[in-house]
Length: 167
Ligand code: PHB
Image (cartoon, rainbow, N blue to C red):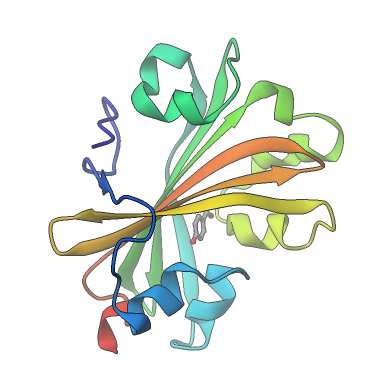
């Protein structure tokens, strides 16, 4: 379980590598491109509503900190993504402050701009892994990404009205 004190994401049970996942679900969870783009194929309008954007300490991260190098502080971004007004996804991004250098300082100013618009416009983006998780009946994934080799951790929980469940 990943229990983050004080998060919009409920605790998620991360599955062992090679756990069986239905093909249609896996096709969504293993999406390597922008999830925002993928959602846009299923609605007229994707909107991101930031719930929290602030710096936090390592102690406030709980288990997530194990996936990132130690930092004095981390930028935390929590959002709800809506497809045609319906809540489709909760997103939580944790970024060590050492990642926020050069143009990547822009990550603290995203506001309603979907994160993927920034990440996937970069030609330095790489992904170390995707972990799949479950929260009750819902699916989640966690990706460790890198911008010019500098890590960040993105957790996404797919809400019941998300097109992922419409398969
Ligand atoms: C975000 O803007 O933080 C965001 C957007 C879409 C996602 C995840 C995070 O799938």
